[in-house]
Amino acid sequence: MLHSDIQSKKKTISLTLDFSLFLGIAILDSFLVTSGAILLLSTCGLGYAIYHQFVLPILARRGSNSDIPVAVGDKYDYVVDEATRNGIFTIGCKTGNISTRCHGITEDHLIFQLKKARDTEDYTVTILKNGPTLFRPPRMEIFGKMEPKETIESYEIIGHSTEFRISDRIAKDRMIHYVQVSLASSFYFNKVGKERMRFTFSVTKIQPGVIRKIKLKDDTYGFGKEEGTEEHSEEEE
Picture 1 (cartoon, rainbow, N blue to C red):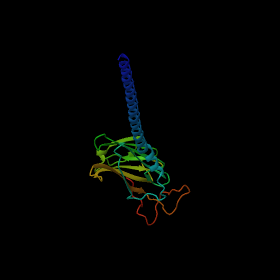
Picture 2 (picture 1 turned 180 degrees about the vertical axis):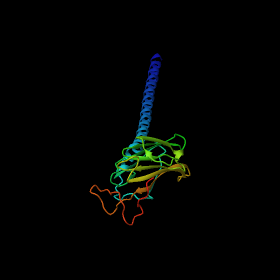
Picture 3 (picture 1 turned 90 degrees about the vertical axis):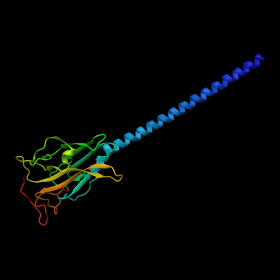
């Protein structure tokens, strides 16, 4: 009888140990699966953020292979991605969201960094310059030399655009030739009916014009009057 009880207890202990081992392995497997899923989601999220923050702007800057110079009336709309809340828009010579193809304009001549607020359609726009630029702030009428870094808020350019003149040099606070680009913001409804802010960059003036019939050796076009175009000179403000 005593021997039978001992055997029964050993069997119970063995079953308990087996169950504990099974439970431990199951918990460990669940932990590994959960950790793997969290790591995968984190990696995907990081990859998505890196793509939109760094890769996409580079592709946009390099992807402009048009060899046609800009013209007055050209417009470019830009909407900041909601997930990253950051956007970059560049104006250059052969590359950028706007590739002017105008001789004397540098690459990344102007860089616009757009930062969205977390819960609202409010943006801070930081503008960096890498070449001679005249700047007319919102609600102002006079152009002045742009600082290396300027900052505006999106609400300032709703119905009141800001403008930039870019060239290869400034003489006595004036430019002999330049491309003038304006920036304005407005609201629109996207495909799912959500109200978003859209930034519109427009080429509003080219002084005195672009000689489109002659391409220079560096695949750009020079400033100048050309018969038959609408971009003839106007008195500079």
